[in-house]
Length: 234
Ligand SMILES: NCCCC(=O)O
Image: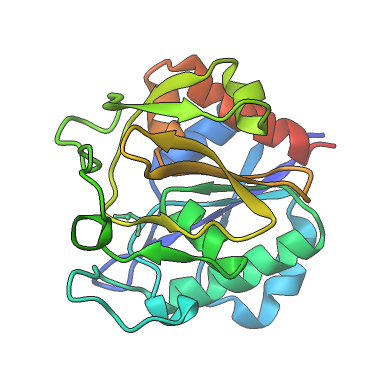
């Protein structure tokens, strides 16, 4: 039986919940059944989590810094408290049950927050070293910068190599990786591009958008989804 994969929604300025079709397509291609999980389900997260075999925390707006003990920096972007709330609760449920979790972009940052870590609220303002361009101007389906993958990590086993090239659409980044997460990849400027749990069967976060690259035929990005969906089916 195909595993049921929860996929979280974004909330736009009009309050409409949205989900890019690329996430759906990547999950279907990888052999899973996407199950859209909206915000507003806080009271029922336990029940929702119980029917899911895995969860994708999708990309989107900034995580409210209140969740990692900071005041908002002037360069903080839009926050969506109802989304933070639903995703934090749901992620905790999934982690407690050791169900697979894939965090993408904001989803990776949120994953770090779940474990007690923080994020740079704005890399340009807060990161101490020169940056590569992390907000590419080219289309989402194009890879834009290199990422070094740490040896002996789950990500390296999936990627099958130490150097990958990814797309990039973020102004924030993971800071102080929180245990049991470890950094499993970084850009040439040191910005963390992937994390994974050393204590869960499959908990991986990536800062890039593999769902977009997979659509464009990138084998490594499709393997990220295939490995995740495979873990969800076990
Ligand atoms: N913080 C939300 C994910 C995207 C970004 O960092 O711009």
